[in-house]
Length: 135
Image (cartoon, rainbow, N blue to C red; front, top):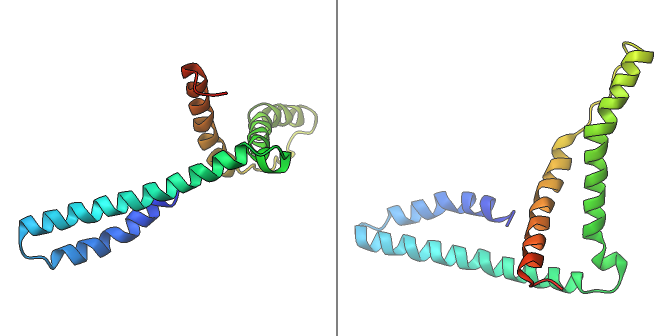
């Protein structure tokens, strides 16, 4: 789905230019609806293909194939722990024992861009378990 927004953004001006060449308002509306439906179908087919790959990966007994998503989750949890607990405590300790020591900055944008979607997937997995769909 990450590709969908840039793709739609890139195609919107192109579609608008093409649709502006249609003089009849009814034909223009039908062409716009058809183009939008085809674009949505194209994006959904890509999502369905990715879902099949995800299912195949998750079912693989090899830890290197099925374990990379949990590994990314644990890296995110560790990064969040360091950022929210370790870093403030380190800053406090440095300010007490070594005043004026500069603290390095931590890039939280990358961490959050990984963590937020994974939390959404975790919520979806919990929903599946509550509904009895999950194994």
